[in-house]
Length: 166
Image 1 (tube, helix red, strand yellow):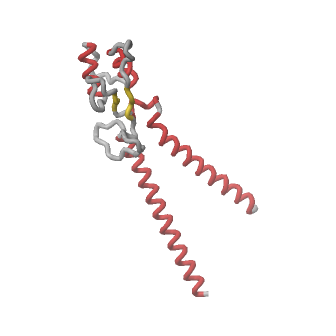
Image 2: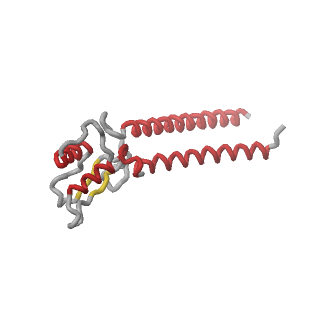
Image 3: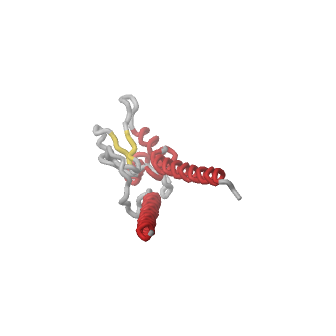
């Protein structure tokens, strides 16, 4: 027979493992969209200086590819370029004597100052799978929390009824 201390220690270890796993998974999910290794999956477009009339607004890969094909001539069609290659080719289009071209990546979390999750995606959006995965995780957590509160409520009602009978 196990002592209560060993059961308590194993329970605490299990809880610490679950909490640690949830913490690491949450940090990974939150940080992965802004890591440069995942730019091709999470970058929606580039924002350029207002002094640049060639790239207006928030051009995505399709607009960049059309401009690069027009500037450089023949390119291998059908081969998707990475964002790092697009940045290098775009910088090569402009003279570096006046500082070149300044750009900023617009990541998964959007254009606003508030980092809101991107819930609404289109079929051709590169983050579609990621968004649906996060929404599914959120739904599963919601259902789990709802059933947990339901269980707590049922347990409390039964317990209070037993106390009333005694």
